[in-house]
Length: 317
Image (cartoon, rainbow, N blue to C red; front, side, top):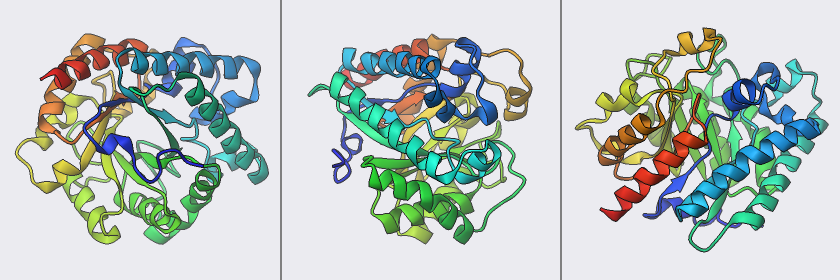
């Protein structure tokens, strides 16, 4: 049975950490090949599983050490049917991959979770197309049908929630939110932003959040921002309306580079962990509802460790 599906503890006043940039860590730090940036392929080998184990255990221990909650993400950002087809993975194998990923995280939760550090099991959905610059834009109906497959698996294998990570345009986000609502799954929509603080589609963040809320009856539990540096979006959060209060988490990039520059980078830009953590203090001031703090591209245990310290500073005040 899902442990927290009926009452997500991050909706209270307790801070939660996430992991960092899973894919960039595996490629640049572990030297592993991730075809199509598909982290679920790590489950296919002992070497991949060992790397995943090291990675997730270390983040979990940071949360426990600082008495913070932890959002445990499945490595399924690229585990939807379009990408599986590209990688020659059958539907049956893809479902088994989801089961394995969830069973792995359940065992990790049993091993590490404490009364002061709840671990929430989060089923991750990624974009059907490119995470920065999609060529094919789905309608709401198409997105709802496409993502329902993974949402059904997450429901069946008892994750607590689902999160759509790196959403680039509103129709795909709407489809996911509606499919999750129909399935009775708590959902989170996380938009990615360009250097001007807008979605890659050109829509403003506020308009995107307002549209999803309006057309789904405020179905998402909350919204997030990911795969952008705080410098790219801090200004759009200042002095805004109700939609800002719907943002419950941030997973920023370590790098100030644009999406296009990151796409073409041959070396990892891991920024400055302490500087990034200090920027999270400002984000927490602007986003009083944001209890979920973590990282995206280029971030690792150093960044999340530094953010954990700032979390505790915030909590103390």
